Length: 252
Image (cartoon, rainbow, N blue to C red; front, side, top):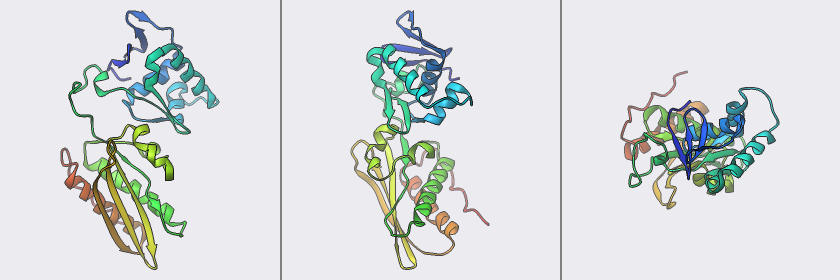
C-alpha cells in the first residue's frame, strides 16, 4: 500500500484506507475503498477491469458488474469529487487528479506535468493480415526498450494496446498521457515500411516523425532492428535524462 495521502477534490484518501470529508470519515465499504485506493496508487494511470478485480477481490472470481456497483457507490458518496473518477469505456477506470494532489509528491501547481508516454499499437495498412501481429510486436518491443533505457513514465501495454483504429483519438485523455507514439506498417512486394510519429498529446503537434524500410526476412530480427532504431532516435532526441544505453539486440 502506498503511504502517500491523496487529495481527491474536497476529499482526502488516507494511506490506512479511510476517506475523509474534512474531519468526517465517510462510510465506504471495504471493496469500494480497495478499488479507490488502487486507482489512487496508480496516480492517473488506467487500471483495467482485471487489475481492479485483483485489487478488490484478490483472485476470487466475481461477476464483472461487481466493479460497476462499487464504482457507482463511490461516485454517489464522493459528490462533486466523483468527476475525478473516469470511466474508460470497455477497458477500466482511472483517477484523474493532479500530481500535487499527492502529499509528499514532487512539484507544485506551477510545476510542469510529469512526462508520460503511451506507445499505441501500430496500424497494419497492408492487405496482409499476418503483418498485424508483426505491427504489435514492433510496438511492444519499442515500449520495452524505452522502459529499460529511461526513467520516464510509460503506460503499460495492457492499457495502451486497448486503443486501436478510431479509438486512438481518445487514448491520450483516457490514459493520462502527455506524449503519444503511434505508427503504421505497409508492405510492397518483399519490402515493408514502418512509419512512426511522436505527438504532443495536448496539441497533437508532431514532435518527431520518421520511416524505416526493411527487406522481409527473419521477422524477429526485423522487429528488433526497427524497434531499436526508433527507440534510439526517441531517447536521443526527447528522453535523454536518466537514459542509459539501449539494450543490445537479442541473439538467437
